[in-house]
Length: 215
Ligand code: T5A
Image (cartoon, rainbow, N blue to C red):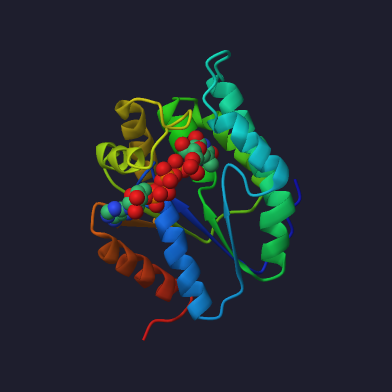
């Protein structure tokens, strides 16, 4: 798949459920508005009309027919293919900052770590669907699965993936940390167990560096 050379900045936010990604997105939105950066916010799975329809299939609990790990992985990448071609690349080509609540690292963490699919299969899909597109920076909000699940549960009903057991999310967390360890240039691992004001201060430090706002 041909992706050209985009000029914008691509920032992704990752982590297990309930670590504070949605809350971080709101903080980043305020920050980018404040420094007058042209930006768009998006999420995965989703981000376009078709990709959001795929999200519904992926996240709606289905007691009649289980979704196999293989189908789950392929649907994540089907959603991502739409998202890249119809949203991410057009905005990056316009020179905008694109901030995505999850991206490909989530496939390595959830389908690789959680579902234990061979990561070579994920790498093959990544190469095919993403070509040379990679996030410039990735903020990984890290916290033990028990804490994330407790925070997420406070919000009410659980989606299909959130219904997994705690050891699934511990595997997801471990897979994220391996990704971060292997790509220290791109990843910023932040301690999401800290109070919100502390987490936001950590995010601000990352953004100051990315957008050249350091004093
Ligand atoms: N998925 C996705 C895959 O399996 N493979 C893939 O390739 C991709 C792209 C998406 C699901 O799809 C899976 C992963 C997911 O299971 P989603 O709804 O987009 O699902 O993502 P979730 O992780 O489910 O989002 P959540 O809303 O559950 O978690 P957030 O956004 O991380 O947490 P947030 O910000 O809503 O915070 C939760 C609560 O905690 C509080 C907040 O106020 C909120 O009440 N909170 C804090 N409280 C105290 N201290 C802090 N530091 C706090 N930070 C947040």
